[in-house]
Image 1 (tube, rainbow, N blue to C red):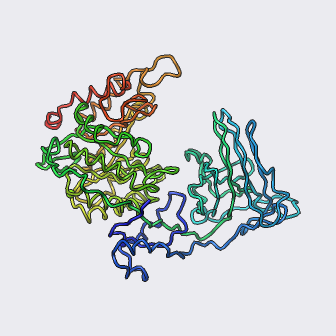
Image 2: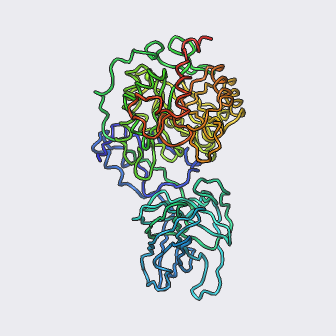
Image 3: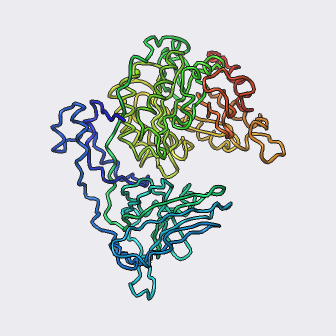
Length: 585
Ligand code: MG
């Protein structure tokens, strides 16, 4: 994979890349982002891409890490203030783990395990390497240990994971357990405050500094499949005084092939309306007239990329009468995603943008990442490339963070991130519409009222799912708009609860009927308020919200039998729209 970097890369200082924070709570550090650094050695680097790629060897930021994970005879470990014996466990029917303990281990032994976790219907199968955290070599008694500060202290964990499976750090206090998913191999810091009793969805209680007696690395099993695994703990110890280092290294992929971009943008719906402007709660066109956009969102590019093509865009624009499409750039994935394969993923989005320009519809370039603030430099660099390339096309809308999570506070995290990314966009594109996500999966759309973004053309994002969300979300949206904020619903859909289902418990959504009453509550409200929306999703995944059944063509031309119940219903709805009349009413 080529890792060429564009000229503007020299704007981003390379601060030291040995560590990135695993958690998402980096709020206190955002003020330290340096958008135009002059930090000595890098400042004289010429702004050419050949030398810019050399600057990432410069590390040395103080991470507070001077400890080690020392294995003694008998599997006794000293790791900073921690000291205790290692042990292994495998739970679940037919689960295995080798070795069965480390009591035979010699000094400096590799701490590696392998085996299979048998499937357990209740997901209870696990493999675990654990150590007592405060135990003397005579094994007289296990004491506990607690961090002094859960916000600025954490655990340094380095695992090798040839099995490639999901691993978690687990800490225990008697019967209580908290875990954190290890997002990176090769060494990472997980802050204590990021440990959760249900780390797979962070739906449990967060760890608050309770005394702990065990720490280890756990591999979760599955409910229907056996899971083979093999992994090693290379380093594991607590650290203090940790300053998270934001990863400033960016790779925007190969140069964009601008020959693919249509030169004639002045066509179709966009040709009639020109550039969009957020104004007093709604979108207006280049003449200042209200405009309403309705269309489909594609699925994450890394999993739904087969639909990122001109034929699909054309079909949605013509057969489905849509005037906007959303292209979600999948950011992180186990092995795929923009951060790993920037050229591949970015080109999928380019394909959709180019097709939208040619079809004369609007297009949302969506940074589809719930943890965008973990990668602010990547996001900014990506959007700078997009703004340089497409900033003169009125079709283009930038969505800079899809669905921030509940822990992402508006003023503390999202707005500083948005300011940082928008500053980059505006260096290249002074005017196109930028839409900004709001906390809790784009549901706290009123949060920015007291602390709005200072920009010439910004709208705020709300997402809803029929069957899941209630009128509260509509009220919040009304409040935001009454405060003069324009709201763009870049994602809505119909989920379980939005259908009237037959008795069969195994029924798919296309076996049921759309619950019209629930759906129309939302659509009528959206029409009344002339809101612009994209529906999730133009994809064939076997899930509630998809408009296509598995196996539908990847290139449009969908027959009636290719459409789910949702697809059939919504194609009619889109075709009932007379956009100019909707805006004018
Ligand atoms: Mg522009």
